[in-house]
Length: 58
Image (cartoon, rainbow, N blue to C red; front, top):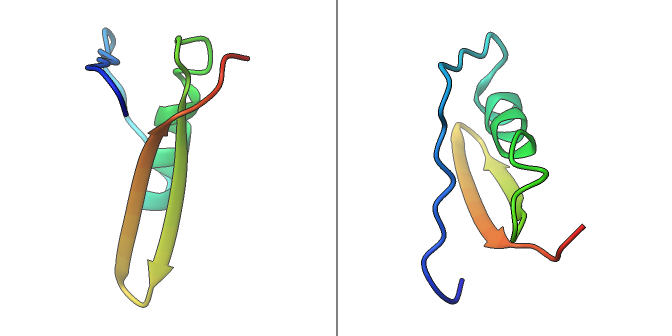
């Protein structure tokens, strides 16, 4: 990302799903942020790769 973007969580969050779904739900909560963060998750066995990038304005 170019620049410094912050996406503060101003409320307590708790997810009962697994790691992958929890991360997706958390990023989705920023759907109205500018720029909107976009998420890619790859799973390889027990390991995850998470890439958070700047998305386009919606």
